[in-house]
Image (tube, rainbow over all chains, first blue to last red):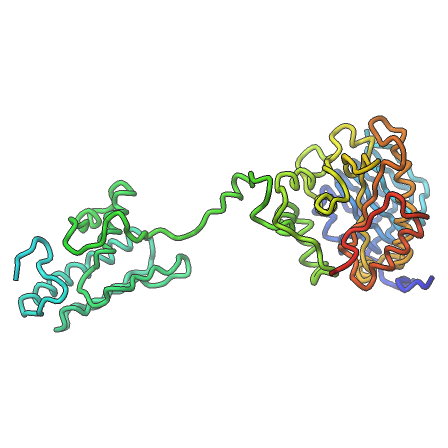
Length: 110
Length: 341
């Protein structure tokens, strides 16, 4: 199968460092076509965000924390989580494809 | 000439110097009074233009309201050849004075007694704007059989996220989408709400799901789709419960996209891979909630509807083929909007 959507390695990625996202609006400015793509989040905090049904493509999350984050029905593709904390978050029906988790603490939402 | 009360002349009377003089006197007094009355009643900065009555022609005073962008044009056409205000204006002044409970002394002073030849007072022209109020915006549509706004318009009204997606990203639409006015608006709103949210939220995803569910019901694919109520929906995370047909008790909706959207989303997958992955996940989802309390009894009770509304016509067949390939068979899978006829 020919891969016509191959992303070139040298493509410049957006890097967001040391930022706190307190609602959907703050994060939605980076959402294009209902997807969050090609972004590196470093030392970021995500609080009480409902991200229902979005696609997250080729993103990296490093030293970041997710609190009360609803990932429900999200589709992650080729994403990396490194040294992250995902707590009190809703992960039902999330699809992770070709994703890497390195030192990630994850606890479910009740 | 027969003496009459009020304006003593009739249309068709021969113009005499006395009549002309009388007309001039009236015109002078009206040219002062009318602008004051209109300015007061309409609240405009723009004044009414009145033409000088000082010419020798006694019936040349023309009264008209200057058009403004704020209100509809109020065009007092008709009796242009008269001096002073016509019976319509007089009736208006009287009507508005009554409605507002008084008005200025100019209005009261001007308010005429009904005269010979004037229009019926109970049918005046109104000075109000002819803006129509859409009651539906305040009370909602109570008509379960139909709606005043189409499903697409309703979707945009409910969800800003949906509107932005359609306007900014899906414009022009990649595919012709089913739309109708013949649907139950209240039911649509119920279905479009996120069932897991504690407050009323309409996401693009949930609005899309509701549209698919109602369309499927109209096409006879499912019976009576309903959202799964809390707290059951937290454990049985399927989109809808249904009353059939056949073995179906639950339903889930998928919205694949076309290759153009995939490219713009910077997805690492091709159209075929995306469709194949979707087919694989459908099989897992059918099994997943079977042993959960109040979930489907077995995988045969779960219907998956793949809505191809976001797939262009040229790619619909590819998506169908690879979805079925990923799923392994077509059991419990139906396609919607799979042709643009």
